Image (cartoon, rainbow, N blue to C red; front, side):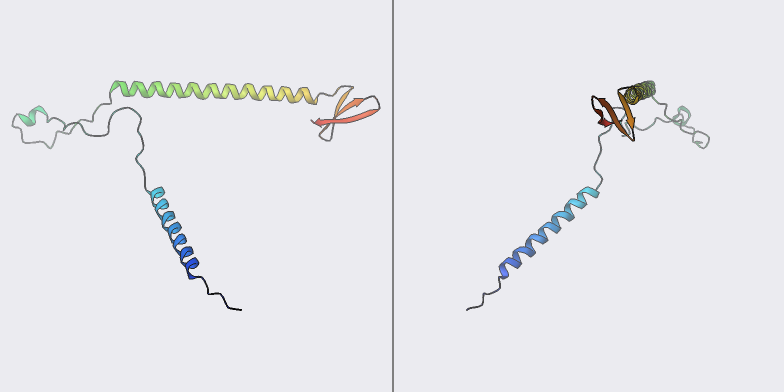
Length: 143
């Protein structure tokens, strides 16, 4: 009997495949960890449109600018109104959700109370609903 030669080609293929998997995993992890740009909501842009104009006394030749401070840009009325409207809509949605949850909770409690009500033909014993039949009691599901 001749001894088979060990297949180095299979080992080489295994090493190449494992190396490719490791490299692919590293690239996927790098892509996952790199922050992606997110879509912003429509509204004012964060880019600066133009430089703020100089105060009138600075353009008239007044070189003493120590006492003049640039005024903070006022928020546009539409942005403030949109934010207020958006907050009101969110509040209404939350309140509607809470009302619906309360209604569903009340319905569930009423259903459970209806199921657990004991009569002369149905009773609840040790978590099992028992129903009266001609020759005794039978299990009728959980209660």
